[in-house]
Image (tube, rainbow over all chains, first blue to last red; front, top):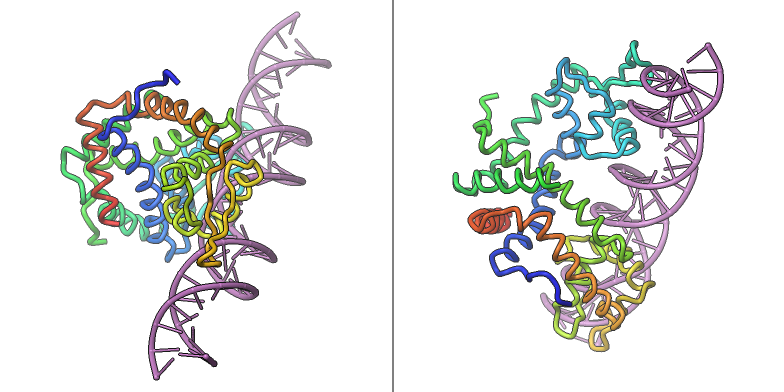
Length: 148
Length: 148
DNA sequence: CCGAAATAGTTGTGATCGCAACCAATCTTC
DNA sequence: GAAGATTGGTTGCGATCACAACTATTTCGG
């Protein structure tokens, strides 16, 4: 085991706190959207579509952005379709393609939930950080993301 | 919607990159332990036990540290038990209690995999960050963790 | 001490999600 | 323009995990 350098205390601290806290943080965010009948998965799906032109997105692109497999997205759509937050629209030009389109009902729900979710993100994370920490977290994950 | 303050660009960047990159990062770490027949869940379980006195831990404490429900841990144990990486040891004093104890086989596996996993953490995350960013990530998640 | 409450762990059930296999539509190549 | 490759999406299946209900053991109040 001529192995790689071990992690020094700062590195170990960053790594461990990041890993364990991330799980807790996600559960806390989940708790805050549950009263609206949403999971974080649903919320992120709605939010993602809402930012696309015409509030619609190809299934394919949606899956990529949500980091879901195609089959994973198909199953997640079941829920938001039956709740009529999202409608399925078949593309006329390329008949393989389906769009996920936010309904008025979905849009209204999102407008209601987004401020609550935003407040959660502040309360649980952002508001505890100094300006420097916010910037450092941003640049750190930007670098990690680019390297992936 | 007299709502809370929106996120400014730095805050939004930190939040979004953190959320999306975390998913990708976890998948990449998963890929690196898979060749050893391990999931990250298994790895974290083995690592957690290995650091406890006598390399054994009460099921209960293990579940808390791994952020698993009790039933979740019971099911996860199935895998590591059948692979004989961990043994189940009943407490004689309190017969409700079971310990998860790392076997020699499990310990040998962990010694082999740990350096590879460590190298992954460096390659995928730590080595891309400046010293200041490492410290900032550590202190940021420490604050978030304490607030939870 | 004895019954009630608390604690440790497992099992039934249902949700989520990935992989492999599949079907359908489009594009490519000769 | 037809065969083969590629792309978009769904379905069968298995893995993971949480919640609720359950059993077994221990602890506590009176």
